[in-house]
Structures are given as structure tokens and as C-alpha cells.
Length: 314
Image (cartoon, rainbow, N blue to C red; front, side):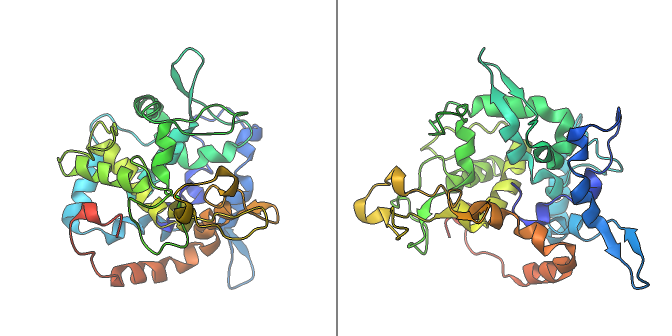
């Protein structure tokens, strides 16, 4: 999932396939999304158009020095983005990396393998820029797989600990973040952001958990995505409901009853779509038309005070 509009990939990044051997059902999957790039012109005709606004949203907020450092960190010698016409990696392209890692599976022999989903070929679309770096994703997943236990569906393969870095499950009755709240843990989203910041700042990571972030590039790839997660309400807050659909506050009982946990809204259905997915889809629903307004609004937000490692919990 790539929540922040700044990090979303426009259709042009996956409507062309370098080295293609022809179409199959997997490649046919994105067709309907590519159609979204067709615009109706003032003369009533229709034309396939490429967005020039969306790709620059996040990077346009950077000051020149920060922009130069981002470019240097994300594009070390040997890195290569296979996207046609690419000028290298930027924050927008970096955004999906941490979700692309979720395609890494632990095999029965204990090794790790980046695996494409036959059921959901669309999951691979934002990961195309990292096609040549799947070995790096496998390495990251292997280092962060068993460092904690992530309870998952017993009918599905066990998920790695790194999946827990994407969220907190603080009850919506709380209006802030405290480590004492139910739904937090030493390897949650806030802790993962601070771990990435520490690597980028050449400082020690959080002592409460052994995050394995090998270098500044990996840290920036993670941080770019996690900041998007932090701004998706159902990645930081959760609704807890009893069997009658009434709110339950886990901080009153000082424990979370799994029967009341909606898993960040994933188990709440709005017709045939779960609530979490609806929030994830908001950038797509907004579209490129609002990019100028969003960029202006973002620039109007005052700089956060204090140290960067205090910002995630603010």
C-alpha cells in the first residue's frame, strides 16, 4: 500500500514493459488503470495523457540541499531503475519499497524468495522500479523476519516481523500517542520510523528492539513509506468492537481481546470493500487534478518543532 499521494505511481510507469515477450493475463491486469490516463479534451475528443504533476509532489517539498542528499542516498553506484525514461530514484519511486518487500516469502528450506502473486498481479505495478533489486528486498526481509512474532491467519503462511513496522493499533478513543497505550509495541510504526531516522542521523537505534537497517539507502526507502503510513488514520488508530458492534476501549481492561480487534479496519466491511482499503484508495480517488492544491497546502504547513525523532509520536 502507498497511501501518500506524493508517493503514488502514475499509470505511465507500468503501461510499458521493457523486454516484453507479449501479453498474458498478468500483464493485462493494469489495462483498466491505464485507461484512467485518458482525458476528455475541450473539443470533445479523447486523448491518452501523462501526468506531469503527480510525480514531483513529494520531491518538490525538499530544499536544494536535502534534495541533493536524497538523490545521492537513493542512487548509489550500481543501482538502476528499469522504468522507461527514468532519471533515477526519488522519494516518489522510493515510496512503495517497504510494501514491495511483502512479496518476499520464506520458503520451506529457510531461504527467502521474492514471489509474484498470480491472484493479485496489480500488487507488482508500483514495484517495477525495484525489479533489479529483489535480492536486496530478500536480504532485508531475512534480517527482519524472526525478530518478533507476528500473529497471522493459521491458514496462511507465517508473516515476517517486518510487517509490524507499518502500523500501530491505538484505540480511536485516544487523541495522542503514548507507549503505555494498548496497541503499541517496541517494533511498531513509531519505533520503526525512529530506527530509520537514527540510521540517517548516524545515531544508535532504539534500544528496545533490534531493527536491522543496513545502510542509509535502506533507511530512506523505509522512512519514505512509513511517513505515508503514519498519515493513514487506520495505520495508527484502530476500532475495537464487541459482538454487538459497540465500541470497546482496550485501555480500560489494559489488554486487547482478539475478538474485539478489527485489525486496523481490515475486518470492517463497507459493502464489498474493507474500511482499511477504502482509506488506502483515497490518493487514487483524489487523482492528479488536486495536485497543485495539495502541494500549496503542504508548503503552507509550518515546520515541526523539536528533534526529528520526536515527530512520529507528536
